[in-house]
Length: 152
Image 1 (cartoon, rainbow, N blue to C red):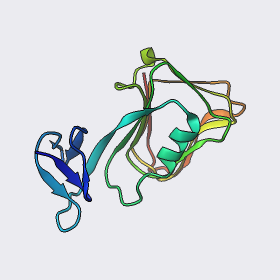
Image 2 (spheres, rainbow, N blue to C red):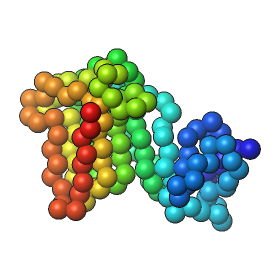
Image 3 (tube, one colour):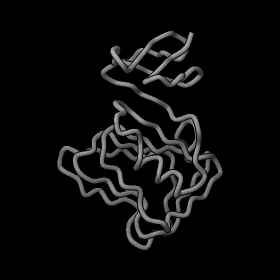
Image 4 (cartoon, helix red, strand yellow):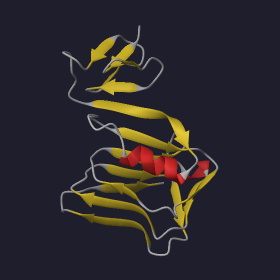
């Protein structure tokens, strides 16, 4: 069996729809059959700041649900090309598979690393070591409804 979202085969990916793990089941999402929430763990990891920035900022515009962006373990990313701007809900940027500092992901340089704007809720930065920014590692210029969780 496979999982299909908007015509893309996600077999082998971790896909959760409305709390149900569809990684090994058969389900069609998109077209005439839609789900209210799709949580997708992005399976590739990033070891380059510009690539991570692009992936977070230019996610699929029609995506509904949580997105998890992984930084490759033992990576140092240079943020001098500008901050990652997060202006939508349910985003996790994490170190490795489990979002732990022991996986040794570092973000260095630049003026700001992450800029949270608008009313973005359920934003999580997990297991990241942020240092050497000329300004602040995180600017959360959001509404009172916005939420940011920093873990490990």
